[in-house]
Image (cartoon, rainbow, N blue to C red; front, side, top):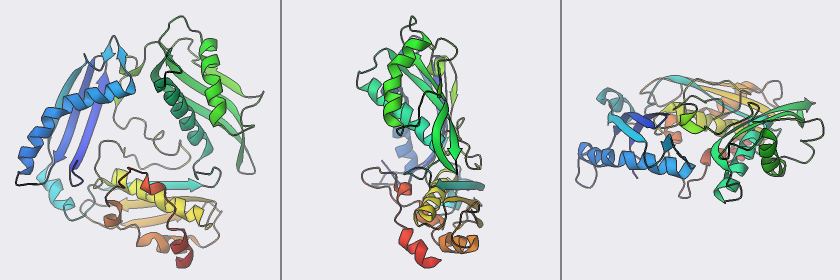
Amino acid sequence: EDERARVACETFATSGLVVIGGEIGLPDRDGRPGGERLKDVMGRIPQIARDCIKAIGYEQAKFHWNTCHVLNFLHEQSVNIAQGVDKDGAGDQGIMFGYAVDETPGLMPAPILYAHAILRRLAEARHAGELPMLGPDAKSQLSIRYEGGRPVEVTQLVVSHQHLDDKLTSADVKALIRPYVEEVLPEGMINGGTEWHVNPTGAFVIGGPDGDAGLTGRKIIVDTYGGAAPHGGGAFSGKDPTKVDRSAAYAARYLAKNVVAAGLAKRCTLQLSYAIGVARPLSIYADTHGTGEVDEGAIEKAVAETAAYGHFGRAPEADGGFSWEKTDLVEALKAAV
């Protein structure tokens, strides 16, 4: 609602309880002070939380969107932080990484890309009413064999998926999900040698925060490259673009993806470092892992101007698209090196 808002929001969820804390800063607008506007926002937080839980689908006895307790401890952003970021300075110090590899069309590592694709397809089917016997909680993990640096087959496939009927066995759940799993994976990736592990504990009825407490930023590797690339440690969720944990990581992905898309390397890791209140990165480091077509120093120089912090916080697209996944720097990078 306000692209100038400053947000650092953390969430903890467990059985019957959601705790929200952190800082929000709002600018003056339409003749109203930011502090006054913030009071209005605070009153809406509990319902926003309930709407999110409902959209995910949690309606179980000990974690239901309509009955869980929501505690709101958000407060106004520190003036010490605000004074450093109001003129496009970074919102904190830190190291961020971006990564791209040409082993999949999306230039992402195959194991994490396909794990996400599986869960996304299962969620779509569940929301469409095709899998009413499954719950909202699920996760996946793939072990993939490579030949010559290319993914060729899934050797181990793990899917743990909550089910609402406690009479369903692991074999039953496997039969339900298998068509959807096979649908999203490239032909030949699953074969007779693929070992499936579906709900390997035998039952997964108690799910979500009731079965395993949730905390903002606890799964940062799942949110990025599945362990295929380094991570600076900062989570993405609940942060506005002045928080370089999020925006610089997105920008580093954007730059790394464009390096690979431009044919400058088959694989690229970009590292950026920042100091609070400073707009430009303190350092830029490129590693093409021996796959580069040009010198890594030339790549660092080519992306240096683009990595200025002010470039990261631009307004989002009207359709909410993932602008950091564009490859619109390809020609500029080719020309620069």
